[in-house]
Image (cartoon, rainbow, N blue to C red; front, side, top):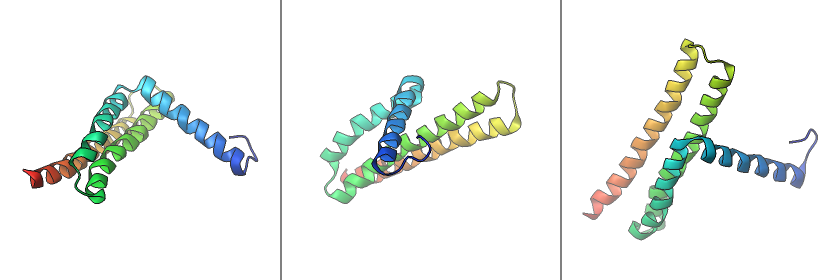
Length: 121
């Protein structure tokens, strides 16, 4: 965003930068593409399986959260990689914690889908 940008111009710039971030994640991050594929399959499946709006949200939100967390993890990795290639304990810790965020979110998604599907069968 340009300094001093306000109102609709700021909103347009922010939207543009967000779109560029999504494009970068899709282009450079295999994990993001894989998780996006899961979400693309999961959304219509959730519409079919859900018996209520609440159930639909309980199925879809973890998938969206997984994409959000993957974007954050990719941002962490990009910043750490930008700083340098040499091994540093804090860099490794940051990357490991980013990976842990993904892991916990996947568990959350599996639990959400598992509980709702267990209730069906």
